[in-house]
Amino acid sequence: MKKVDRLTVLLPLDRKIVKFLLPGVSVQRAGELTGAGYRNRAANLWIGNQEEGLAFSFDRNPFRSGDLRRQVEVVQNEDGDFLKLNLADEAGQLRGDEEIFRFFLQPTPTKPYPARPVRGRVTWQWEGWSRRHGYPDLSKTDEVKKPVKELAAKGKKLTLYCCQGLQEDAPPNNRKPLLRGRWRAVHR
Image (cartoon, rainbow, N blue to C red):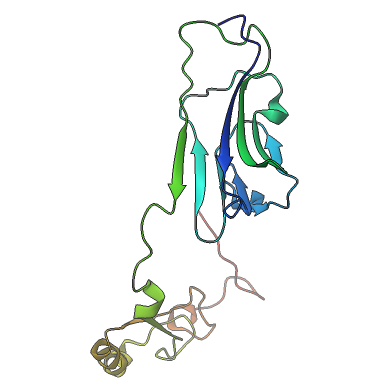
């Protein structure tokens, strides 16, 4: 094993799927693949389009390669699109019999899309049922029951939205203000 100077896994990718990339776990790093490919250090990686994709991950780091910028690559060229995993790139990086190169490839999505997404079963209504912004008026409970029954007859649910901020004249705020000017949230 110590004499092996390169160990690379090359996985062909369907060009119709190779449109977007999510390296790591931060969605801020997601982006469109433009044909120039991608390369970076070993990390979780998702490659796909709006409908499907392929996720690469590992629980025990299989990478021994010294060139950190080329451990994981998406190669896009005239020969096709490939996921290239550079596990070793010099002699002596593979230590011996204890080497385990375990990684995971999982197609996405793994479940079919629901026939009726949640948005189709829920109706949102602004909090016109309260007297003051952010302060529910329990005397209007009977008034709220009417749209709930109407929507239930259509197989939908009513979700009442209540803002977390309170209006200045809401009952809890009718005390003498501790601060002049804007209200501030204090976390203790």
